[in-house]
Amino acid sequence: MSDPFLTQMLPQLASGAAHTHALGFAYEGLEGDRVRIRVPWRADLVGDPHTGVLAGGLVTTLLDHVGGLAVWVALKGFQPIATLDLRVDYMRAAAPGVDLVAEARCYRLTRHIAFVRAWAFEVSPEDPVAASQAAYVVNSDGGRKLGANLRREPGAPA
Amino acid sequence: MTALLDTLPYARFLGLQTQLDGDDLIIVMPFADRLIGNPILPALHGGSTAALLEMTAVAQVALSYPRLRLPRPINVTVAYLRSGKPVDVLARARISKAGRRVAHVLAEAWQDDAANPIASLTAHFLLDDDTE
Image (cartoon, one colour):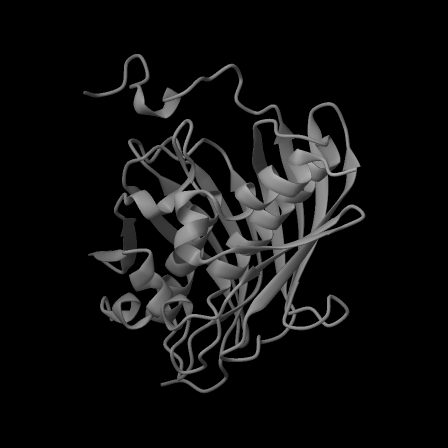
C-alpha cells in the first residue's frame, strides 16, 4: 500500500537538490498520476520589483521540476532523466506576494521519451498563471557515473 | 543600463553579472553550489540555465527597445542541448524581430565554448506601448 518510492523518495526528489532547496520548493502530494509542488513567495525570487510577482524564470524552473517528478511517477521509480525541451506559456500575471503551486502529469511514456504537461497557479489549475509542455529523455545518463561532469572532455582546453 | 539586472531580485539570486559587448549583452551566471540540480553528475538545474536565458532575453530587449515597463514573456521554449557542468554559464540573446507590441528573441547559453551551447531559448515578449 505505502510504496516507499512515493512516500519517501518522491518528496526528497521535489526539494532535496541544492537548487530546489535554495528556492524553497516543497512537495504537496500525489493524486493519481498528478503530482504537485509549491514554491512559497519570497522577495528575493521576484522578477520585476515594480510588480512583486515571482520571476518568469522561477516559474519555468518550477514547471520543469514538477514535470520531472511526474515522469518518475509514471516510471514508478527513480531513473536518470533529463529535460529535452520545455515550452512555457505565460497566460496572465501571477498575484503579487502569493505562493505558486505547480501540477504535472506525464500523459505518454515511451521507452526513451516522456511527454508531460504542467500548470502553475495560485489556487486552481483551472485558472493557471502558466502552462508547459515538455519532453524528457528517460535513462539519460548514457552510462555516465558519479562525478562525470567533473572530468574534462578529451581535447578540452586545460 | 548594464545595471538593470542588479535591480531584479531573481537575477541577484542567480548572481547574474552583465557585460556589454557593443550593443550586445553577455550575461554571466557564475557557478554556485545553490544552482546544482543533479548532485550525482553533478549538473546545474536546467531551470537555472533557463532562467539565465530568459533574463538575458529580457535585458537585451530592454536595452535595444527601452519602454516604461520591462518586457513581459508571452511564451518561452528552452531546448537543453548538453548537461550543465559545475562551472560558469554565459548567455547572449539576439532579437529576430521587434514590432510595436511583440518581440521575438533567440538566446543561447554556453560554458567552455560558445560553439557548443548547453541550452537555447526561443521566446516572445510583450512590449509596453509607451516608450521611455
